[in-house]
Image (tube, rainbow, N blue to C red):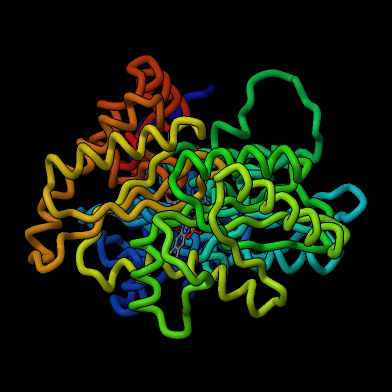
Length: 477
Ligand SMILES: Cc1cc2nc3c(=O)[nH]c(=O)nc-3n(C[C@H](O)[C@H](O)[C@H](O)COP(=O)(O)OP(=O)(O)OC[C@H]3O[C@@H](n4cnc5c(N)ncnc54)[C@H](O)[C@@H]3O)c2cc1C
């Protein structure tokens, strides 16, 4: 790695030089126009910046970063500003420039035969899904933010979502990436190869690096055959152990085509029914836990029959007590609405302390029992509302405030409760940041839970790739 050496810092005003690179109208300094880029979508993080720069090509990104290195200017890459850990928000020093990738919005290539799609960083996830569908292929990443989040942002956070159980996360869905380094050099790693063992895995170094090691400008993405049919069920299960047994049964019988396995607690369903108009309980009897289960395949009739037979065996084994199978698209959408609107519904119950965590799939029941008991003992009256991607081990182990408690008093417990839950996560060999990343939210707590040697390796990589520390300073490390 060649190190950038600054003999004489360039002190000439930055803004005219940026305007010279991207054109004056693509350097935004007006306060009102900058505001949406300075505040995160929930209002949890707010910062200041010199300007928002909107390059329109990889070459322009490279020139901006070269200038940033010459002037020691911090650069905060930003896509759709939907990130959940404050990674896309600048600090409040006002020194940074925000590098918006939204004008890099071209799909460069769609190759159905090769199952590859090459998209620039600012293309939204929904646009990529649509382009894949246009050639009868599937790009399987699916998030509630897909209309706004960008390919660059999903790569930089290694986004997950509801289909990771079968398709994996962004790392698994990517052949290659194009990256601009801090000094302005471009690494063209837009490989389309499934096999390439020519040394270190650079692609996976930048994926998940949250804008701290380089700026991703394009990616070659993996496409899949489109499942022609889907069978969707909302299944009542007595407890998380039974949910685990059902997962194992479904994976065994569906030949690896379980595309969704989402756990939902009864409190979560009650919150949705109370706060989301147009929802109803899909089942007659109350159960403490539910699973939203979806299986993909090619033959609709065979799929439906297979799902029914599998559920009948699960009833017999005591793994499930009731189930509703969607028989129309509208019914399927209603089942999905319960899961997708759950985070929103939680807001209707006052304060919620969130934990985006993962543990090994088989440890989920034991983890939840221990974490719930700990919460009851240390935070009396709080209401755990766990839900999420049980099929891949990632739970949103969220905790709602006690009924009647003042919201601010409850949220003052945020840090203390996070640490208490993370201690339990660590005992199960889990991760404190399963899919949303570290950003600024978990930066300070990360060293307490990550292997010290891993932390050292991360610092070495950061100083090697970004010796001046201009790339998204204060995030991750
Ligand atoms: C309603 C909702 C639901 C969500 N559901 C999920 C979910 O199920 N699973 C999940 O994983 N996430 C989820 N998220 C979080 C979020 O959508 C993802 O993190 C998304 O990947 C961020 O994309 P973005 O374009 O908005 O990135 P931004 O928010 O703009 O940026 C996120 C991070 O990536 C960096 N970055 C952005 N673009 C680049 C680039 N081109 N090069 C280098 N760094 C870059 C930023 O600096 C920042 O650190 C959800 C968010 C919302 C609002």
